[in-house]
Amino acid sequence: MINKTKTLPRFCKWHIIFLVALTSLFFSGCGKTKEARAHLTEAKNLYENQQYEAAKIAIDTIRLRFPREIAVLKESLALMRLVERGQSERNIFYCDSLTPIRMEEAEQLKKGFKFEKNPEYQDVGNYVWQQMTIERNVERSYIRCGVDEKGEIYLASVYFGSKVINHTGLKLSTPDGAYAVTISVPYDGGMNYRFKDMGNTTEVVTYKSEKCIDAVNFVYGLGDKIRIKAEYTGGAPFSLYLSENDKQAIRATSDLAAVLSDIEAMRKEKERSLKIIMYLDERLAGETK
Image (cartoon, rainbow, N blue to C red; front, top):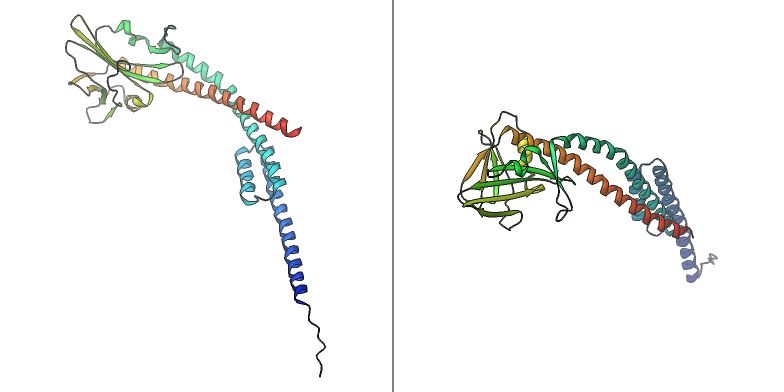
C-alpha cells in the first residue's frame, strides 16, 4: 500500500514558523502601543485636573514600561513639560497669595525690635530686641540674640571681665538637669572674637542658625518661671542666669525668624518657578516649529 501523504519541504516549514512569529510580534507590539497610550491618556487627565505629582508618576511609568514606543514617549515628554509648567504656575500663585499675609505678620512682630544695618559692610541687616542692642549693654556679660532680614537666627554669648576665659560655646540648663548646647565656634577673629580695653577683656562668640537652634528651641519650650543657667564652655568656667527679658527676647526672635524665613523661602521659590516657566516656554515653542 502506497502512503500518499505529502510532506512540506523543510524551508517551507521554517517560513511558516517565521510568519507566525512575526504576526505574533506584530499583534504584541500593537498591544503595547495601546497600553502605552492608555497610560498617556491617564496622565493627560491627571494633568488637566491639576494632579501634577500623580501625572508625573504616570509619565515615568510610560518611560519605564514602554521604552520602545517612540511616538508615545515623545508625546509624554511634551506633556511632562506642561505638567512642570503647571506646577510652577501653582507655586507662584501660592507664593503671591501667602507672602502678603506673612509680611503683615512680620511687621507686627518687628515692633519689639530695632533694625541695625551698616551699608558700608553689610548687605543684610539684623533685627535685634530693643533691650539687647549693644549700646544698652556696654561692659556687661549677657546672651544676645537677633535675626537677619532673611530669617537666619543667631545667639551670641558676650563676656566682659578682668580675666580672659577664651570660651567657644554655650550650654543652657535648668535645675532639673535638662540642657541644650550650641555648636562650638573656635576663635577666628570673626564669629569668635575678643579684645582688651582699659584692662578688661570682651569676648563675643556668635552661633548662627544650626549652631544655635537647639539652644533657641530649648528656651522657647520652657515656662516663664523656670530658671535657665547659661554656662560659657570651651575655656575657663563662667556662667550667668537668663533674665525674664532674655527669655522673652529669644522667644520673640524665634517667632520673627520663622516668619522672615518663610518669606525668604517663598521669594526664592517664586524666582525659581519663573525661571522654570521661561525655560519650558522656550522648549515648547521650539517643538511646535
